[in-house]
Image 1 (tube, helix red, strand yellow):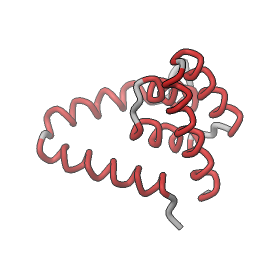
Image 2 (spheres, rainbow, N blue to C red):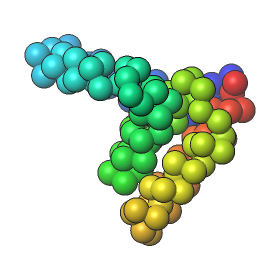
Image 3 (cartoon, rainbow, N blue to C red):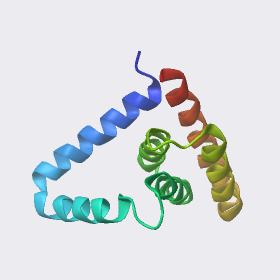
Image 4 (cartoon, one colour):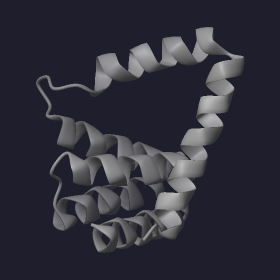
Length: 115
């Protein structure tokens, strides 16, 4: 069963895919940057995804929130680690962080329930 967050993430990825077809040079360059920064290094992929989640919350980017909650869980982040990353984003962002942090928590709950 697809959750609302999983469906929204799928739609976001499809929209990005369509944009990539229209602008392969720019999206290709962005994806190279993404892969260069997202892999294992001094920080684990899990920790990088938690950082990216915090930035997504601060930037008020719903697609980023969905993508990075999902990726953090896939990289082995626990519920407590995701919640703590949300907490850091909230205290660094104030009121808007609370609103988008709540969206991230809702995504966490849906992705956990979906397995």
